[in-house]
Length: 183
Image (cartoon, rainbow, N blue to C red; front, side):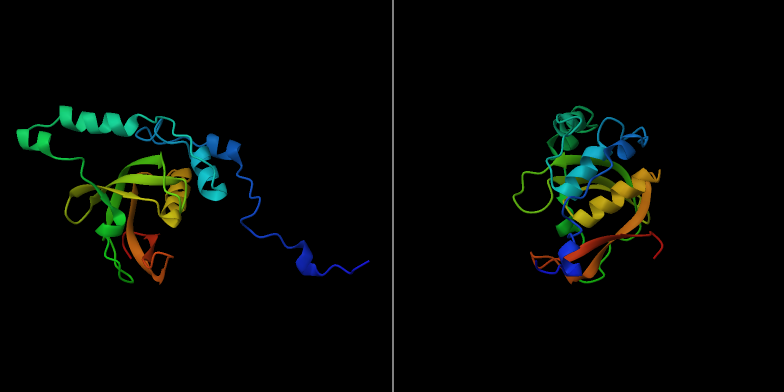
């Protein structure tokens, strides 16, 4: 019989992680997010790479219709939704930042991308210095994990800044990290 080495008993961290679904279900969401996201499904999706079950799959379509129907000018009726990609919004250089922002709304959607996580976020962010609100989308895993966890702590809205790290992803882009607004 071959002798076992200690390395034989090591299991990779990402293999077989169990998300305590009940723990995430017990967390009360802020009213603006209630019914729009599922923390337990979102956590399970980003940790275990399982498909995300959107609580309201028609939300985005209705949101775009609402934007058109509540437009206050003809020019606003002709405007497109204006969802920008976060990758294009924060420059792809080390330590680039969004500046101090407040995340005021969030929707988590099922992603059709072959690579990456099965979810992406649409964030309404307000620039605190400019009082300007923009809507951005991102599938960045670290940002999703940080935002999910901050919500679970009851932090909402989330004052922060989105920064680029000095490490790159497989697509040769500098990774994102959520940092306090006053860094």
